[in-house]
Each structure stands twice: as structure tokens, then as C-alpha cells.
Length: 122
Length: 108
Image 1 (tube, rainbow over the protein chains, first blue to last red):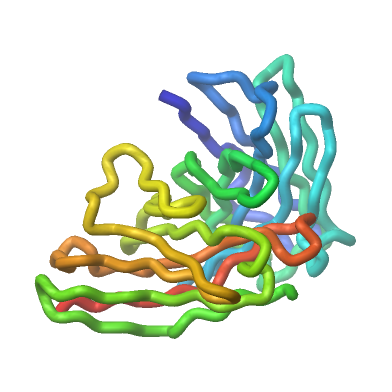
Image 2 (cartoon, rainbow over the protein chains, first blue to last red; image 1 turned 30 degrees about the horizontal axis):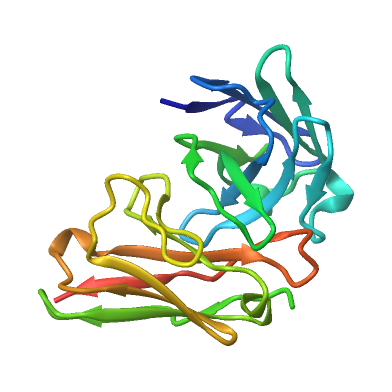
């Protein structure tokens, strides 16, 4: 059974960089036709896609966050990571990592991490 | 298009059928997927593709699509179906993922 687990600081100061890692177990991150992504959910609000990465390193980012986001992959560790720069209180959210099966006419999320709450506060 | 639109709230009587819809230009090209999220939990995939249910999802959940609208139907809603439901699809460019704003389903 595939499992994804987010890790990283739960508290980040304004203007600093939020860094999270997703460790994947029970399956290889280097499989074809799967992107690996980050989704966030501010308290009491809806889901927002942050970005995704393929094992080859190809990335896709939400245009509204693109200037501040970097997603990277480490296939040797079966992990991928998120860096979000210059954070503000508006970046406070539960951050989920996820697997995204991808085909010509569809992309969906079949596995989610449990989510990790990141609070931006001084 | 860069938007998927859902009704904020829908209610259904116990045992009745309810349809939750998702509108967006990208749905003319890409299938919607649907997620159930209960309070304090991660979302769970309930429908993807033309009408595919992952293992463990009850067959009362089904999906359909017409034009720019995707729909999730729950036939014979149960108390445990009370949750937030989100649709998702690629945007029209095919380069980004979109989420709808979510629909809060109340089972009366």
C-alpha cells in the first residue's frame, strides 16, 4: 500500500521560506504516468493546487504561486520537496502531498498524505 | 479557463438521490475527478475519469459529464456521506490542476 508522509516545520516566520518534504513508501516515485504534487488548504477554506513534479524533474506550478514556489524530486530517496519563499499569514494552511496519475484526458489524486499544518507567524 | 464552479451547499434527505455539479470550460476537454473530505481528514478520491470508482468506494457514488458540466451523483445518500465534496480537473491548457470551491453536503 502506497503511503505518503509530509515532514517539516509547523511554524514559519513571515518573509521566510517554508520547506516541506514528502517521503513515499510502498512504491517507487520513478514510475511513468504519475506526477507528485502539493496541495494546500487554509483553515476553513477549500483546496488549492500548488504544483506538481514528474520523476524526470518536469514541474508544473500554480500561476498564482509560481514566482515563490520550487518543487524538487530526489529519486534516490523516493522523496519530493516543496519550498515556498517569502511567506505571509495567507500561506497558513494544511499542506498535503499527493500522487497524481496522469493521462491524456485526466489527472486525479489517488493517494494523499495525512497533511501537515504550517502556521506562518512571528 | 481557470475556474471550476460548484454550489457552496446542497442538502438531501436520508436515502434520497443528490447530484453535485461542477462547471468549467476545461470539462469539455478533461474529465472531472471528485473528492470527499470529512472534517479533520484528508480528501478521499471517490470518482475519476468517465465514471471510475476506486476500490472501497460504495457503488451509490457515480459520475457523469455533459458539455462543460461534471456531476457526482449519490444514489441513496447515507448519513456518513455528509461531507465536503470537491471537483478537480486539468485547466484548458492542460498544464495546471484546478479545484472547485467545494460543496458542503448535508444529509437530513
